[in-house]
Length: 91
Image (cartoon, rainbow, N blue to C red):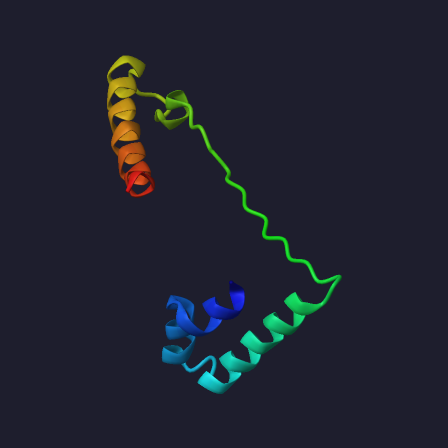
């Protein structure tokens, strides 16, 4: 999969377009992936994780202001921010 990916996916286009790699270099990398996969003890692991951050509305409130009116404004701002940040993940 990675051998195909390095020569025919968006990453290949980005590497070629930016001048960070030539087509011949990408073919050499693909060949190395295939050689590695052919080895009996060759293995590959790709780790993935997420970090979720929760922000307290109270921490967004400015010091010295009336908390009741600020709390509503801060909560509304937090909801708008969360909707904007979460929207791409829903696509």
